[in-house]
Image: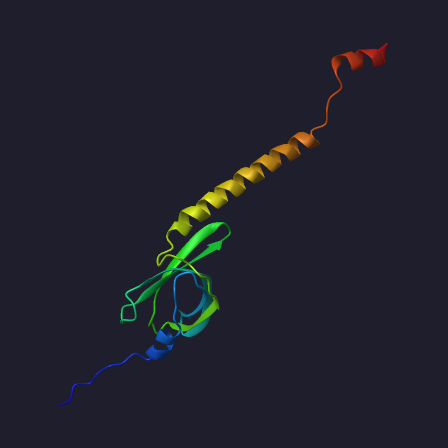
Length: 142
């Protein structure tokens, strides 16, 4: 009896040839199974990290912002649930792990919130009608 070697249903050479790096903006098409039907769903974001090289357990972390909330997903590089990985944009970065982007994004959101609060307060004070002073009221009644 021969030993049967099970191989992955995906083409591993294609995934290695992508040359996925941190700093790339990627669109990952993932297969979602709902009942008996399956569909494709895209997750587009910045690659924060690439771990475990090109071996079988290699993963990459993708971060995107939805309505001001940061969402991160860790994808196995050779998962059969990933239909396609598109590289949308390549960026030159000096780090292999871009975890500092989390704090940077949080600071940016806080700054924007402060700015919007300040603008709202200015708008409220500008819209508030000024009431005539007590002296002006009495002069009109005489």
